[in-house]
Amino acid sequence: MSKPDHAITTGPQKMTPSEAFVETMAANGVTDIFGIMGSAFMDAMDIFAPAGIRLIPVVHEQGAAHMADGYSRVSGRHGVVIGQNGPGISNCVTAIAAAYWAHSPVVMITPETGTMGMGLGGFQEANQLPMFEEFTKYQGHVNNPKRMAEYTGRCFDRAMSEMGPTQLNIPRDYFYGEIEVEIPQPSRLDRGPGGENSLNEAAELLAQAKFPVIISGGGVVMGDAVEECKALAERLGAPVVNSYLHNDSFPASHPLWCGPLGYQGSKAAMKLMAQADVVIALGSRLGPFGTLPQHGMDYWPKNAKIIQIDADNKMLGLVKKISVGICGDAKAAAIALTQRLANKTLVCDATKADRAKTIASEKAAWEKELDEWTHERDAFSLDMIEEQKNEKTPTGGNYLSPRQVLRELEKAMPADVMVSTDIGNINSVANSYLRFERPRSFFAPMSFGNCGYALPTMIGAKAAAPERPAIAYAGDGAWAMSMVEIMTAVRHNIPVTAVVFHNRQWGAEKKNQVDFYNRRFVAGELESPSFAGIAQSMGAEGIVVDQLDQVGPALKKAIDMQMNEGKTCVVEIMCTRELGDPFRRDALSKPVRFLEKYKDYV
Image (cartoon, rainbow, N blue to C red):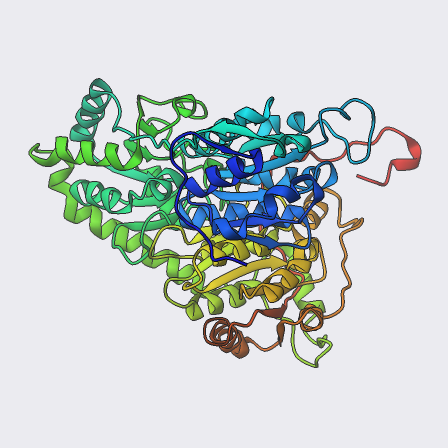
């Protein structure tokens, strides 16, 4: 086999559509694709290697699309996923939806049934464009082989310009033939700060603000704007809160960092937000789930003026009423505002020192509370703790309280770590304990909230950044949905560390049965074999933890194996059945029954 030729073809040339497709991907810097091989695209797949492209075969295509998501989120460039037409493609829908809500520039390549077979009900036939219509920023359908490079290039361009998934749909017979084509070069937008009038208006509002607060959102991460956000915060002396599940959008060691808003977020962040008279939402769509009341606090400031900055004009004022909307890049807008404030005397200048003390005090109080919050205190959780006090794990140890475990994991986190969290009760509680120093470090399933997210996403992130420690958090229910991708990590030498919280239940939904259905548990219990043992059977390492003083050492040992021995390891932590707060207390209503046979089910 010849060595990869990384030179990009220039000028019109005779080639096959497969060559045009592969050359266009190479022009966009593609080096890794996740998926499962298939006859539908085999002619193109045959020349991936000489183009410098590695196809990473996965166990299930949903995992492949999650890997592409993780790859793009940590690298800031495209993640690419491909599969066989029909079932291989339909398997990807859930993960593409997650990537859509994470604003990840994933390119979903969907080879389709051949043009002479469509509509005849042939093998693996499906209309693949409607499947992804809701979860893509652009759908390119190759309607003629001569347009292969054009549509391929456009899908890659649109994924970056729109910051979201795109779909490239290719009838399988269109990979063959002879065409004359010029490979399009990538087109990337140079984003600006927003309109002059809106920036000036925002600067005037900030000049009069007494207690400004900055929400640092996902746009700060995607726009590489952390330093610029920091400069704006320091000019204002403003506390910076992370938007929901964007804990990596501001360094946790900075004195102005206050932690995340939203579900299981920071009380310090919420108490400071409640005092704001002007809020700068920098690179945040102000999603509804990230601004809901939490910890018994309806903290969103009702009378504050809101300055919202987002690259997507459709997000401005969509969820929250705003005073100024700036359609612009988070980095450029932060620079423009800081420049406008540089030589102004601000009302808040006089209170900078006092506000710094308030910020430090609220943060210290929250840290103290977290230290003392060793277990959940609701009636159900207290019953579970008492019930399991003398119950031994299968290895003869103790069941551990999740909050204590999460605090120990936090203390043991290596520098420059990447963490993904799945959906579920313990994973959500983890939001209070996950702090980062650099962007592109925290990956969660965002608004789509699908189970089975964390492991494959972290495998993709590790493929993009092999030099960084990679950790996935999952509960035992969500873990079982994607744990087979441990085989992908082992087979292809992409070592990651997974922490599985084994509490033998579907915790998030079971909490609703506690709160609304009088502890009538239907389909909530999970009895499983050892997940560490299953990992070992797949060729990975496994560690079972059932003593609190083992938590930190186990994580450190697993990370050492990952970074120094290239080994994947599953750390299985045996947890009590206590449960944190539900996702939303307004999500359900107390049951009402009218039929006699159901009268007791209230």
